Length: 390
Image 1: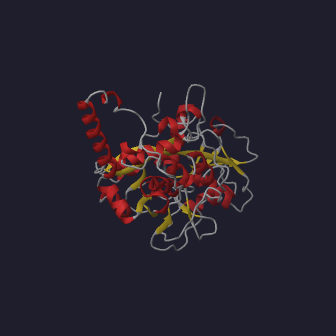
Image 2 (image 1 turned 120 degrees about the vertical axis):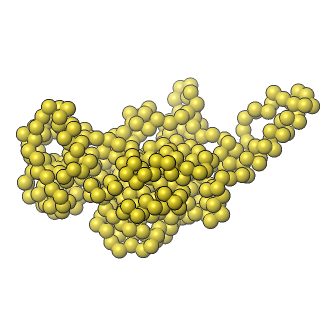
Image 3 (image 1 turned 60 degrees about the vertical axis):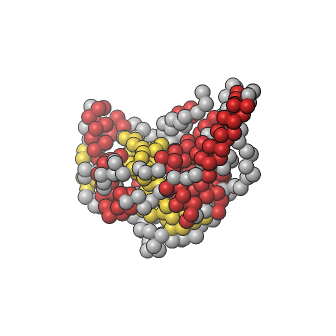
């Protein structure tokens, strides 16, 4: 699995009560593992707003005749029945009052907060927001990390309602036929870290310098690929223990270190050596998506997850001349998804926009201080491409 070749922090299952709000500062760092409890449960925070009623006039054209009025009445009844109906997973979530999520532990995505007494991460906030679409503000969230091959049995068996998976995890764990792949939720980067006073500022500057890496990791392979593309060579310092890798960098044995950007950000924070002031080069070695994946048996639930994430990712965009912007461009009617008419407001109210969630767990409001880079809408220079009203 991916965790075998990356310095992901395994946290085990956690059981903690959380009451997240937009005003709380969330920390995105995942420190060394403690001894957590069996599972994580938390309140799905959100806003409760009155139902605005169905909008639109798709029945209006039939109202000029008795036959048209009968057709309109039948269509209205069908819409009402659709809104009340839920697929297998949706009904289970509503019955239990809980949404179950999971993903591989990565700094800023899921882990323990710096004090070790709370769970934090972008995955938790996204799970909370999606859950609010179905459960409103009174639902609960359970999260289980996939930090061993056996943990992925929950995905294979459909025990989790929403899983956060990258391509390697889906392929290596033979999950391709078990899940429906939804939108990307985060783009993870492999990158290069150097001391703050280093003359290395671009990837080309690595030529002739020594670089520490974990042998055969995704960061190592992407480093070799970029070096070949740039036609540069470097001095290779390979390790098979992450502790030895970090110690070598801090001792000055190598001029640079490569890894996933979140792991490098944690190493930069944890370093107690002379190189504690390090910087991560802005140009990534490789960028790959982590997707929202749902069990391949409930298309209604897959649609709810996808549209909820699209709403979060697009909500930050302001109105522009001739364009509505934000939720007005992307949120379908609640009846189309079997949800309340104000479902999108509840999704954003649960944890903020995607910009808020990223900032609190990975960005400037967190300890990791990672730039958004590709984790922004295409209109803002990122890689998130969402449907909207053209």
